Length: 450
Image (tube, rainbow, N blue to C red):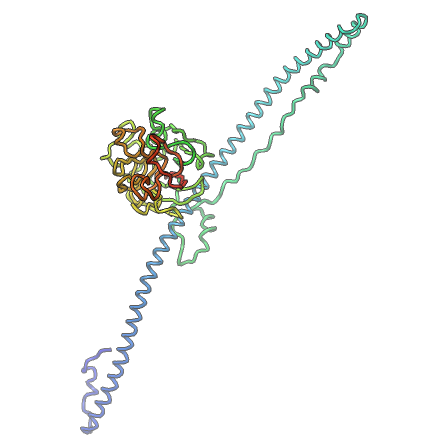
């Protein structure tokens, strides 16, 4: 609205016959009008600019909230899609196992039934012979004059009918093949999208499905009585089966029915599945409490990772650090406590993931999420702490050797107060266990790869 005087040139010129007084009166009136218009327009512009600035702040805040909410929604969708794939795979596997179980049971039934009939026929023959022998023996209890007739009666006796009655074998009715409903419409399918995402508003569509099926490789049950510490079973078997053997179980189960209620190992997944990502789920006997995923720095099997270095056969060297990941790609901490070592770990962070690595002060873990727990504060899965007491090797120490350890609040694994280190109850006790203090929490850990 700002204009120069030259735009009002015609107004400023003296008009024909215009007197001095009339000219200046007109100029004053025109100037006052244009000045009032200018001030009004200027005020309107300033108000509009202020409104825009205020709205810009509001919009910036709203945009950040939107981006944060979108990231969270995308994470939830990814988790749901992944669970859908995992559930479909699990249900399919269980249905296949049930069908296989039924087929084997029917085959066993038919085999046992056929062999039972053969054995029954032989037994009936023996029983018929015994019945005739019994009849003949009783003949000699009769007076001599009655024996000839009694012998003839023994010969005519229908022992076959009696043996059938005495040795009647009742077979149970073979049940029909049970039905097993394999889920349809897993994540990524049109049916899945229709059921779950068609109702979303147009301005908030679902992201592209990137779900892939996670495969369970290991489960650590911290209360099942089997210890999977760093030197798992080395004393009795000469190797570290659970962590380092391609096929050994180290006292764990390989039955899918035990996969969330005992130490569990799927040797095929552990040894053969090339992993690009790792998922650790903290749970309690199968009830999920929190989870976290990492993008691995290299693509290789878990067996490859756990035998990269610092193995019980090669020896432990605190200078060798083996990093699996340098960023977490998602997670949900649920209601996990701040001292939980793998999913939350408020005090040291969870971006960095290490395997077979010393965390400082000679404390080794099979898996850990930091290197900063100085002064014996634990934190990790499959620990052997203070390895210097066994000269850089796997072996027995009086320090914590357990399934899992918290990131403790105070030094020396919680023995100086605060949060205790031991998760669950599975640990090796040497020298009175003075350094192993229970945390009071029974977290279990399932380790998946994809």
